[in-house]
Structure formats: C-alpha cells, structure tokens
Length: 114
Length: 114
Image (tube, rainbow over all chains, first blue to last red; front, top):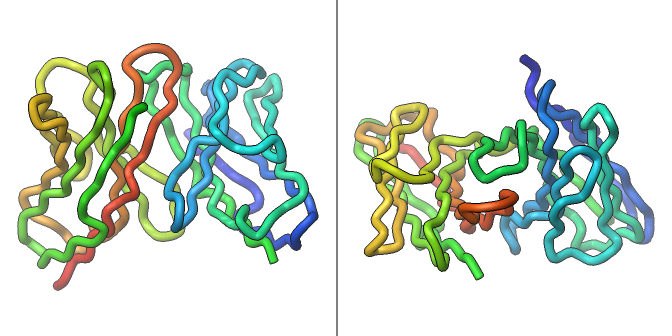
C-alpha cells in the first residue's frame, strides 16, 4: 500500500505570495492532519480534517487554511507569506480521528520564503 | 495544558551501546504517549505508543518504552544501538479521548559513533 505522499517536496516563494500544498493520504484513510516543523518552534499542529470537515485547529493565524476533498486528499493554503512561514510542512493520515488511530506521516514539503 | 519535555537536545552513543532517551510530560488525566523517529529529509515514523495496560511497551526496530505515572515519564530505550538509529526522536502526548491533537517535545538528536 502506498504511503502518504506530499507535493511538491520543495518550494521557494517570496514574501506576500501565497502557496498551496497537497497531501494524498494512504488509501482508505479518512483523517488528514497538518503540522508545521521549524527549528525554533518544533512540531506544531495546524489542523485536522475528517470526512471533508475541519475537526480541530491549532493556534495559527487565519492566513493558514486547508480543505479536504471527497477522496480524502487534502490541501493547505498559506496566503500573504511571511519569512517566518519557512518550514517543513508535514501531513499525516489515519483511518479515523481518534487517539487510538496511528498517524502515518508523509515526507513533508520544505517551504522557503525569501 | 498538556506539555512534553525532552531534556536532552543531543545524545551521542557508540554503536552497540545501550540507549535511553528521556521524556517527561504534563497532562491532567491518563495520557496517550508516543515516540516517533525522523530521519533526515523524512517524515515521522511511529516507534511505539502507550494507551493503557502494561506499562512496558514494545515497539519497532528493537525499541521499548516504560510509562511511569509517578514520575510523569515515558523514556525510550534500546539495548544495543545501530548506526542506522541516528536520527531525531520525538516524544508526544495526546488526549485520551476525542480527537487526536498531539503535543510534541522538541526532539532529541541521536548521534551514533562507530
């Protein structure tokens, strides 16, 4: 079974631009979560989607948004990019949305904002 | 609010030596506890998790962890380290009910000398 895939793997943008990152979960998984990883803040939860609905959201500004499609694929969008948005963005999928459901992570998208 | 502390930023061990990575958590109820490993350029991989029951948990790649409620700890151990174990290790705590919104520690970087 194919793992979680994220595209693109690397991205370079300039301040003020917007960016869309994509995540394809493991087949059959209905929950997708997004995380931001930076050297300064570590791993921080962005949001979680289950059955096309955002179920939980972390403490990030409204510039960060996401959605999930009927096939469970998910996208996250960051508008008006800032230098501090440079990070590794990780997507994780799981069968359900409970704590007992193991999360499987993708390799991440490395975003650099210049 | 829940929190996780990994006191050691870096740990260096010789190949074949034993390993213990420390993790202390703060959580009001019985937590769900996890250990993940991240190799360079990769996403996170779940090593093991504790939900309830036996406090000594066996994971993949020869790792184990012990939940000690009295010490609020969940330390990761391996009896004999291999060079391929060099990676970043993250401890995480999640709520024991409802949706899974984990809090991650800042990570411990493991360096393995030949």
